[in-house]
Length: 394
Image (tube, rainbow, N blue to C red; front, side, top):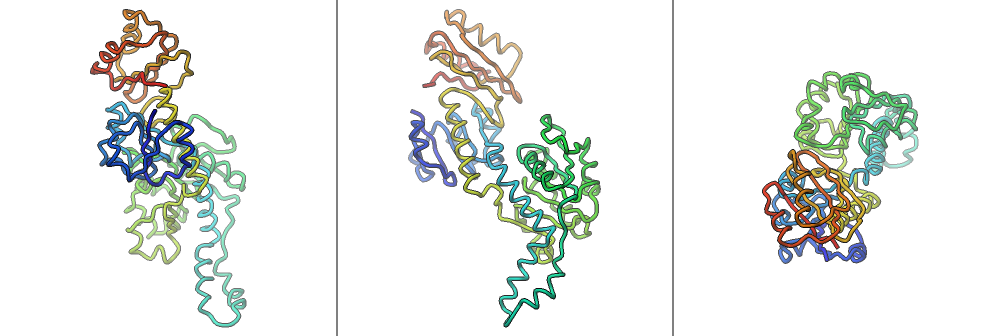
């Protein structure tokens, strides 16, 4: 029976674990249970927990994995799963809430109406006289530039088109173009120079840190609205501050409050709209993420299948025999032949086999006609090019 350590922040009925034959371990039990087969986290930081490196897998109920030591997990042969798409609708809806709120001056209008609570008498005349100060714009016929056409970007594009917006997309890695009505830009500069509103949906990596900085900001039309519901670090904040100060960017809306902007007048002026990281904070999104993370990790624990891993290749195969073997290796020439040829002296037929590779990691799934002897399995694990081997499937 496998056991899973669930840190606080993952809200999913315990009966789900019971159906899967899993132990549910609360975060407070960590000292008691030094070793778990898998870890399930939302935002809990695993960088300081050495126990994760003796586990079989890590599931992240969300998309970003900066709270997980992914590189070290790869070296230890541990796949890290995430849940792309599970919270996409939640992020999309919040994005349009901010976008429309900015264009209709809804945030400043709301603050002003609240201030009227201190006024005495009938406030209807005050409202009628002053409402002209909050005249806004419609987003229909405005040009929306979407940087990153992943799960969220696709939903944003679909909603924007339905609202009558013109949609420009930039994503050099995109292969799946769903909305034919979108204009796909060959360069980010092309998008930035034409968009009235820019929204960013790219992951946080070493390559994307400070992605939107002085050079790209210089290509933005003056007065553009910039929305960031990806990660705070993908924008160079010093360059963003200067762009706000000069009016290059008229309003910045983000899900990540930054101390740098609190010392300015941008917040008071309504030119910076901050929300407290609410993008995935809906009951539906949290349940979707948790269930998806658990399902993927359980499939790996029970079958060795890998879906939505950030550091391992996608590899899934239906069981054809009771004897399944998985091998994680350093992806080098000749590894496939080495693995398959090793079965012949043992007189074991390979009934089904797949091998997939990703970022230096090779992953094989074998369904064997007979069980692999313990001595042969131990020798396989001892190979320096083998990061991990498993035959513990139930």
